Image (cartoon, rainbow, N blue to C red):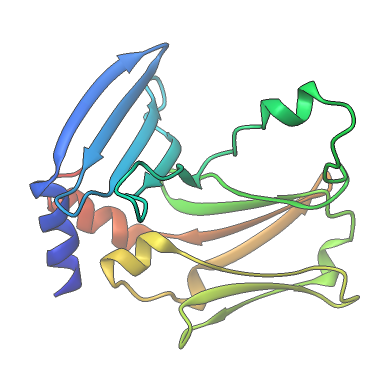
Length: 185
């Protein structure tokens, strides 16, 4: 059972918790050398950042890969004016979760709600965002459901558009119930 193995991995990991600046930071070190760091808001108990790091090929520390939260802006690009950088009007794709759903925000999408088509590909275990005018296409998965081997159901998918931001949500009642039952929430 994959759910059993994920919970077993979490229970077997070395955990370190720290409270700093109104945030609870939890660091997990897994037996295979991977690391996961999570940051929660103390007042709302909401997940702010989740990032992963694994060993590089030379057994050094690899870079952090952000799964939930906003990516940290590069300070090098800000200091140098001659650097080629991405246009600020390009769409920005990021994940921000709530207690009841997984949320993805795509900023800088000015099209009306009727243009967007959001679908689920159950065989590939991913969601797809398309526009009718063929100006935007994004395929993404839900790593939390993949780790727990829970189904990705199209009835749990919902989206809205406001202020040039497309917000896609997937309800995750089953995941939270599984985590509560196993003592992680």
